[in-house]
Image 1 (cartoon, one colour):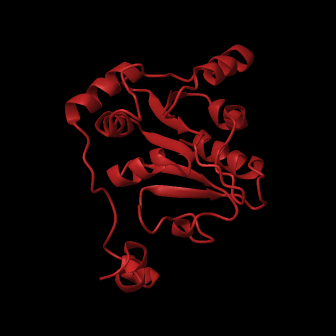
Image 2 (image 1 turned 120 degrees about the vertical axis):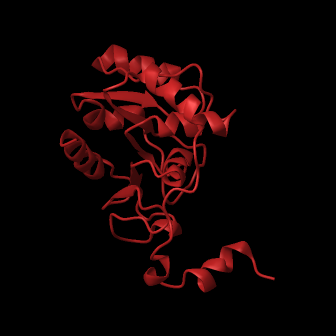
Image 3 (image 1 turned 45 degrees about the vertical axis):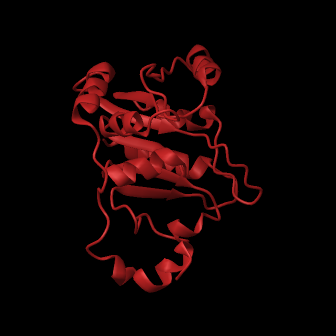
Length: 196
């Protein structure tokens, strides 16, 4: 008998023990995925965005205000889709009215109501960008490329340094250098996205 949180000590005791593991272990419904792709515009580079979590952590704030992602959202040639669970219509409308940036909300998807629909939506995207929340974990499980903004200090699973993710090879990590200072990693992410 062992606590689930202690399994890593025996099954993944070092980096070498991760070799050959990871990758996609979830599959989205292909019909639902293709419907999402059609709604989002086939042929466009489409990026899902997630910026909020309901967790309230006093030491490491993972959540962002949508406006903080403006350098990423203003990269030309990209269609952005909200992967954010909960009601954020007001923030999305404010973003469009104040900056002209459009963030598509898919009324057919409720990220909290159906994980199957969330998987299809995520699989329909070229890239997921967001914080350490369910959108990043879903992308990793599906093998969809995802860029994750991590606070300083990060949660244990992300380790303390590096861009790669041991658990999900499709993820790239963008880390805060200074506690609660998001401008640096967001600027780095925007530069990377401009090269897509």
